Image 1 (cartoon, helix red, strand yellow):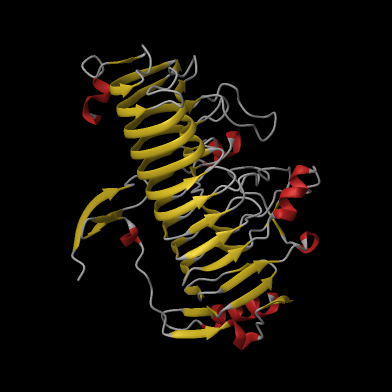
Image 2: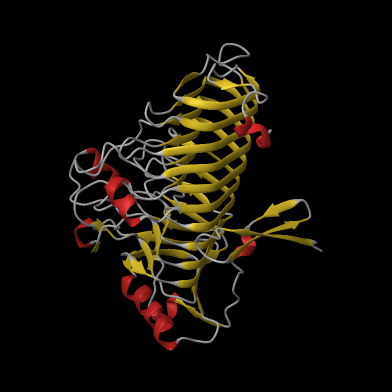
Length: 448
């Protein structure tokens, strides 16, 4: 029998009076208790609405009809929509509050590749335009806006974005608007995504934006190594997000915490905060665990621990740029193993593009309190690079118990540092002169 131990700490008091609950099942610590799993007494099947899982029949009417029924009948405790084994081709659709989308083992919800009829929606206000193209953006394949109490789960069924047609449009410069995410929740709370395989997203895979109390657990996210911008999970201007026990192998950052883009993100002013990333394994040509580069609303109180990365571009990447403004503070990354990685650790103030020419070059990011500890790497081509900004140095950068072995020997090439201060202890290879010993730098004393 599971033994539950709960420790409750007040978190994000600046946003809302909520409690962050950590529960230990035996020796397994989890943050998933922030959103309890709902049991739905009312259950319907997509086949009740004409759904056909033959991989050819278009099931858009069935999905939209079933969700319309859930939305308008409003059964007490909500309704579970069951998708039995089979391949269900469909256009994009919206979810509704108080529902569970349940994929049986062998069930596949597959996106149509008819891009001409794909619906458009307005750009996010914290981005000011589509992330790739000016104007609006294509709606995510599975979408939710202003929702509460929504669960996507099952028996490891698959949501397949069939993104190759979108990737080719991007490569050929034929995109009219920004590609659709696979799953996106906007202005929503009480969201659980678990025990589902996400495959071949056109763009970012799972994107909770302006959300709170989100649990993403036991998911598998896969896309080809060369698939453009197929980020795994991107919490964006969201709070109280729990990401645990997942495997991600995509063409871009595995997990990237964001909060808006340049002047639009500064004006919107909604940070990402209280984000936990735990027991994630994966590979990417870009970053394993990332913050940014879109951080204009601010990012704080991020914990990433027990991470395993292989065949990855950058192990841990904190990235921002001139014009971003905002802040990055209280970031902790711990217990990381990485193998065959191009750069182990990179913290940079010169990363990412701009939405337009109206960004303020005097809007400099504030980066303080980044702690990296207990990190081990083998076959790491370059240990690290920490480069702040001349007029906005990065402070409180704390490194401890980091050992990054090189490709041809026990030690990687030296670090590259500028405009940074902090401390380092038990770091190999030794990082740089700007990071003094902990006895000389009080800003890191409590982190060692």
